[in-house]
Length: 274
Image (cartoon, rainbow, N blue to C red; front, side, top):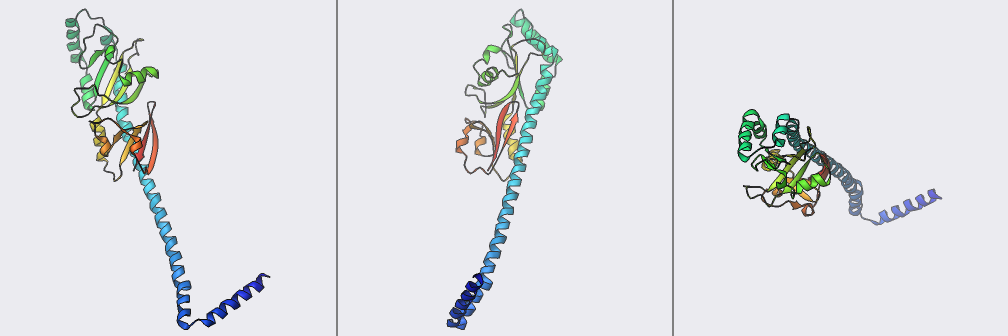
């Protein structure tokens, strides 16, 4: 049955071809024997090239996301190590909890404290800002040491207490910071100072936001990188890296080519590459 159909089809084609001129027959041969196979071959090659390019691009963006993740995590880890050295210092713990008799008594001890510690050196080495908030009413509010009531309404403090955290990282836009020269965006590493006693004292290490942006820019990638915390863009090598403005929303991002999750001290972040 199939053979009969093939024979009839062959006869029909031969009859049709016999009606064509030599010129038309040559055109048909050229189209079906040269042009069509060439189009098919080129399409296959083009598909392979495009597929390889997509794989290469995806691989590049994956490497970029991992490099960004490593560098950001390294900066936060430096803050963590510094926090640990302060957290386990008996001398600092005693200074925070000592009942000072007067403001003069506190100032005198404060001056002696910085003569005997390298606290400022450790902070300046990484361009960190260190503050300690103590549940001690005899402490005089200053630059490095303040009473705990100064931060009870801060976002990072509520985040720490609401989630019952001992340490962690928090991204905050501090509208109340009148001393901020170029950025009110804060990257805060917090650590409860309860190694020696069950106190409410808290250490805060503020990472340099501009340094973090500069680090992303110096990586010199052709892609735009966004590090997102929930619904906000907290770090970027693009225009969303401006520290003087509130964090932009991730809803403004379109056509995200690659995304990778990262976790740091309980904070779920997301690296996006465009």
